[in-house]
Length: 120
Image (tube, rainbow, N blue to C red; front, side, top):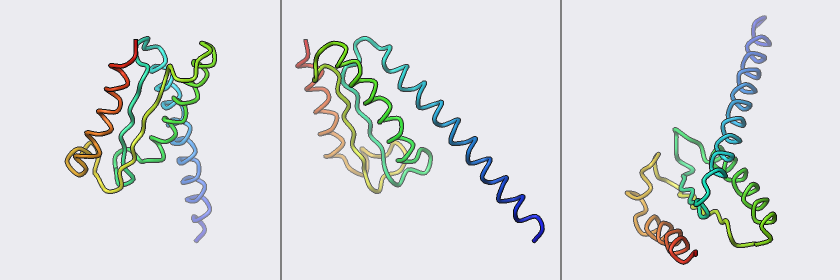
């Protein structure tokens, strides 16, 4: 019983370090996407059942990318130049979305490809 507070503190500190590391990764990931000159449409496919990369982690990265794209759009004076698509599946494992949800997966990919082909 004496060691319970120490264990709780250790868990809290490890969670904090994990959160900080993930935030740093998401920020650098979002910045890296911004450096791709022809990457105007992005597609995030993720699942709430993914055990390897949680949907909250993907949503965090997605929010960062959207913010940076909005900033880039405002600098260019446009509203539709850069766009982020996202689809959250409910019960598919990591990178198994096309197996579990083939129609929705194909539609999401087609939506992005149509936008890419239509852009000058």
